[in-house]
Length: 100
Figure 1 (cartoon, rainbow, N blue to C red):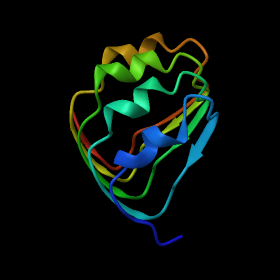
Figure 2: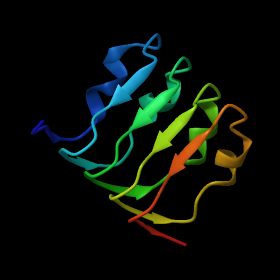
Figure 3: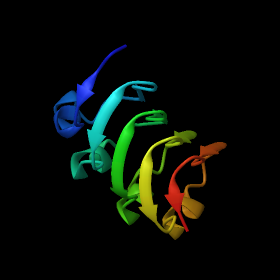
Figure 4: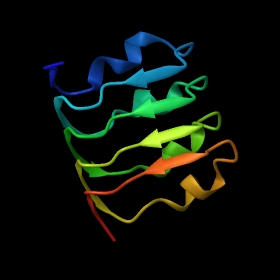
């Protein structure tokens, strides 16, 4: 794909979405708050883009996540401890960012 722009429209996809994979594009900006309202999301793959900012503690609201892949972006700061509370998580990829 050659998707560009930000993820602000992701909230319009609805809370019933179970999988979001927009790996290897040219997406920019921060993770939108609406992303954390997608309570049925089990697979989130946003790696290899140009996403920035911090990973919000609100990521802990995605309690059904099995896979979280945010590698090869430009995230900064610390990894939120809420990620450790995602009991269903079996795959976590955060490599290639500026995380402490």
